Length: 444
Ligand SMILES: [Fe+2]
Image (cartoon, rainbow, N blue to C red; front, side, top):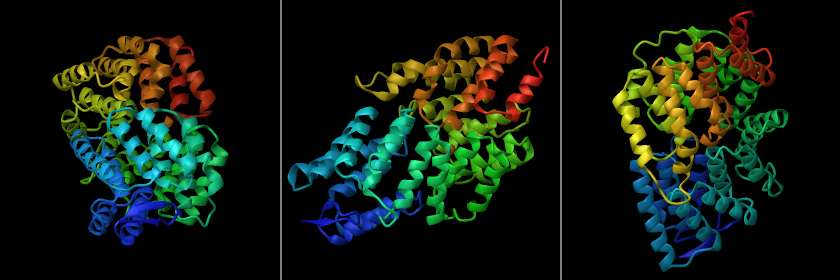
């Protein structure tokens, strides 16, 4: 057992320098959202089955699936990590990673995130800590937190630092969510110039274009890059979801549906983000009057299997959309009962967000679908400002904004609809969707 240095100059405990080198590659593959992360991890463990940072990474990769099954495997891996740390040498950074991981496994996303942010303050080149903190801030609905986390580390990086593009792309996304669009686009475009296959950076720039109503340009941007995403894992479905949103923004409903069939819901799709993409897009297509045929059925089938999971309220709300759209009342009842019964620890993020907003949102989804739009409005209005706590991006949460607006329209609440449209058009001047609703209002 010895201490080596990784390619960022940080001390790493490993039995074999090859394990360090390979783990660096696995972390970069994670940042690049590549399909070969698992293969790379296997080769790390061949070189050192008990390497602390590799056990940290494995636990995180399992946890990122956000499923009950993988959560169980993550908990087992964490135990192996803790046993390894109890018996042998490890650096302060490795021990701090393990402590953050334990908090995450316990459901305390905020404390886990603070732990990784503290690591990145001491070791600002710890790309893995920076990325995990970003992931958790994202699902905590904290855009300024995402932005600050990376901004605090940037002084220690330059373009020669390995993985600089991934940091720049992550910063671009954080800036976009925090509303700093010009700076976001600059960092995102630089990252893509460094690596055209950097899908997260490409996606950050697409978010800027989505928020600024640059749909034609956004579609062309992603179309021009999508040919390089062969080695990208399921996240590419989400990037294609953005292509479909641009098509929808342009009023090209057939194209949006074609993108759904070809690239958003594919043979390989099925994880929580795939299900969320699918539910969110089908819902919007139906709001535009598109007949989506039987497309809800497989989404609802898979959602029904996950009603008892407590990983991300964001995902659970999308499962509920699919179940409501496919008229699965029993499954929705099971979902609500399972989540209401979930108490969790005192700092359990899921339980807190479910209570603060998830429960009302799911009830609103159900009411809207059951032909009770007035009830949906009454459920949503009081929690509207808390929807951000679900996490996800502005573009993703927009489906819930649209739900409120459509329910107000369906319930004949003209003043409310006009007010919501006024607010929306201040944020998205000239948006086709909002303009079309405004034109249809009585007296318009
Ligand atoms: Fe996105």
